[in-house]
Image 1: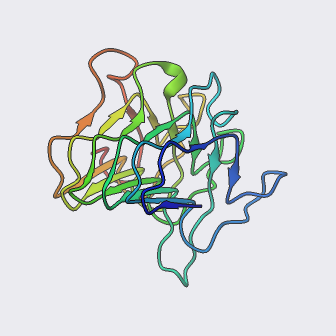
Image 2 (image 1 turned 120 degrees about the horizontal axis):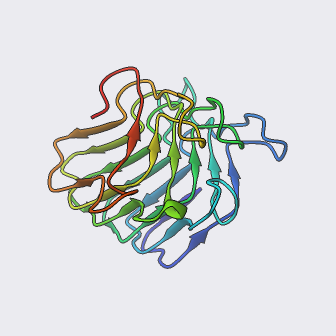
Length: 198
């Protein structure tokens, strides 16, 4: 899915992206969702069970031929995007690895700012697990983004380990971003990965 060129105030809810209707892997060639130069869009929404509508299941995207495949990538002049209540890199039950080839979520570039992944309540939590590289990547001067209250490297039950391939959260030439949050549960982003958490 592509959201770009100034597209605004769109809602992506209740989809399987990279899966068949029965929940099997049928990944897209490159990314699951790409948002470029498009602010104030909403991917998922508050859900008592991550992945249940309005949340999405975004998994198994990317290919060897493409050399990449991120679950959700934001870049360009992209601000005010909210990503909530999704399963990113797991099966539709949130219990096992069905990872995207690269990162689960990537925020890239100095104009990718003031976006929210998760939130300050449990219903906003994303499960970001099983992805080939880092669960969340912030790079190339991404600034003032908030990564709050997600399960990163854990299944939806919050205890079963479903590792991302590299770091839980990776910051590469990125500044003034917020990982965690001011109060629980946002203050406790759970991470399990093959490398360090952050």
